[in-house]
Amino acid sequence: MWTLILVTIVLSGSVTGGVATSTAFLDFANEAKCQTAAAALNMTERIGISDRGGGHPNISPPAYYRTVARCVER
Image (cartoon, rainbow, N blue to C red; front, side, top):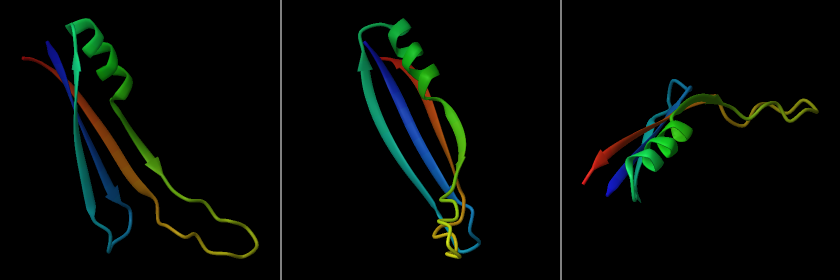
């Protein structure tokens, strides 16, 4: 049995922002399936809500998130 440990980290781009994390665990029957899932889920992205047009300001500063996926045998 293999377990995929998935950690998601979100960091606000704002000076007054913060950090949030989340952890999930997924079980797989073999290492190959676990590694395939881990490769698909590992990523780092910058996200933001763009200007809505019409002179409205952005409603959120950009944020960064990262997902880290690692397989462990149990």
